[in-house]
Structures are given as C-alpha cells and as structure tokens.
Image (cartoon, rainbow, N blue to C red; front, top):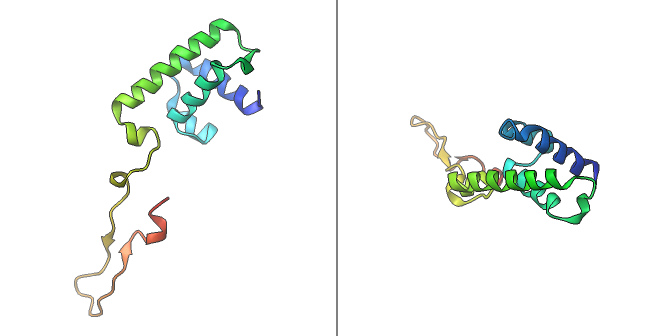
Amino acid sequence: MTPDDRAMLAFATKWARFGGGDEYILPEFGVTPVQFYHRVLAMVTTPRTAEVDFATKQFLRQFCLSKIAGFSARTPDVMQGNRTHHCEPEAVDVRSPSASVPHSRTYPPRGIRGM
C-alpha cells in the first residue's frame, strides 16, 4: 500500500462515525467524494490491505457502499464527476446593446468550456 492509500484509509476510518467528512475530501486528496469512496472500497475488497483488520475492512466496505449509493440516488451525473452537456455553462453574449461595432465574442471562450 502506498502512503496515499494509508492516508485515505485512515481518513475514512476516522471520519466514518461523523458521516464521512465529505467536505474535506477534495481539498485533502484532490478527488471527489464519490471517487474517494470508490477507491477506499477497492482497497478494502482486495488482499493488498493485509495490514487492515477484518472488522475494519467490513465496516469500511459497508460504509463506502452506503455513501456511493447515497450519491447515486441524489444526482448521478454531477456527484460522480461525470460531465454532460447539461452541466456546462452556456455561452453568454457579452456585447453591449449600445455597441456600434458588432462582434461575435461569447463567454466563456471556447477553449475554457471543458474545464
């Protein structure tokens, strides 16, 4: 297990009794909560986590499954980090009505839409 894996397991174990600490996952690990719980679930369901006892693995497995199911029930596309056409901002024309020279600038610029 990598140090990042250990940190994720420690975080999940520590915060599970408080509901998971979802608001701290992105700044701490750089992944969305759904991605985090999927990774922790993968760790506790494989033999590579031999240093974690069976009871903790079972607890984290159930906790991760319930968190993932909760996210899926709310808004699957947005919560799971899937970008779909309805999640992107629409282009807005920034021309002022009194502009004498028409231009075709839109906001956000085309290259920034995919961010």
